[in-house]
Length: 496
Image (cartoon, rainbow, N blue to C red; front, side, top):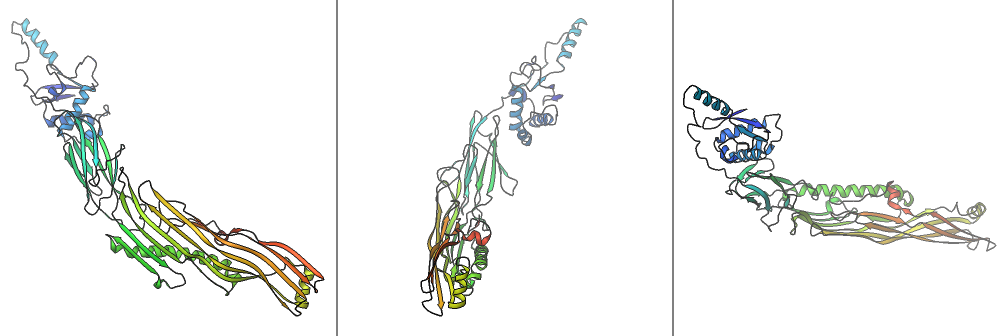
């Protein structure tokens, strides 16, 4: 491949030259910089472009090809290739000139002793090497970590990101910064230090704990040294405040819902709709489970209520002051007061516990035997969550109270002393709750029935016949799992 410089002199470009080509540059040029300075910037760029299009020369840096319009980049790459002995140059006409000189002497003509005119003096190219780069936000001077990541929350006034490079040698103007911004073609700046603006933005949806940040990708190149890169992730500036009071014994128009989103107040309506939908879904599931299990037993007797709710929440994205990370900073509290409250009777028959002859005698000759379970009490559930730094969070969820269950009997006699009945038994329903995760409000709860064991004593025929029996009509189990048909799943009041 023949290359011509600005003086009109042609040289042969060698790929991976042999060891005999000592310096890679022809005589009388003492250095790669001196030789390359005899070419124009367009010639140097064309030289680099021809190398990039050569399939037998695959080692060219793709970053250099993208920045081929920059003479600093082209010169730096060519100097690096020459010093690394990946390319070399020689004058293809040198041997021809020497032969002409010998023949001229044989014909009696004066032999030339070298070039008619010496090459002009050239200025050595300025070369600088990129050692390291830094990025820091304007708030607390937080810097990117070693892997090149910095997370920021710009705020309403945006965030001016400071860019700084460390170079060795050179004039200090060669570092080239390229910043690719979201939804734009990017900007290019030069200099040892530079800046760009990470812009503020808002996230107008309920998924406030998991968002896709806007990323700024920054790369820096210099005359020599590897390309340095880092990423700046900008998180939304929304600040959320919620206060919700729900009573399912009242119509939704009487529920208290207050939502404030700064500075995007216009999205409060969407949040209200989504939050209420989640509570309605949860209440409908529990209502269906209670109707399937309790209503057939209780009928229209008794009184109960459930999921009387108070929820408070405030949160926003924040920068971790001690390192490069951003996190969601929040505090939340939740109360179910009650989770379940009841006061009712459930009748059950004694067929499995009383011998047939006693049952027939009592029902046919004496009266009506009526056994029942009496439910009374309430269970509550409360929780609190907070996150104050990227590494510090707390979660506390507990259930309290219980619903007592007592067994009893009523006997309707034709003759008061013909039969004596004594029924003893008790159990309870308690709430179990925990926080399955701490990075966001979440509740995992269940209602546990401890099982029921009853002791039945019957004296019949004025004390001549006595019958005692213990039996366990109900074993302990998860009440909600029995109702729902599966283990209760964790609940995330604000989504996850």
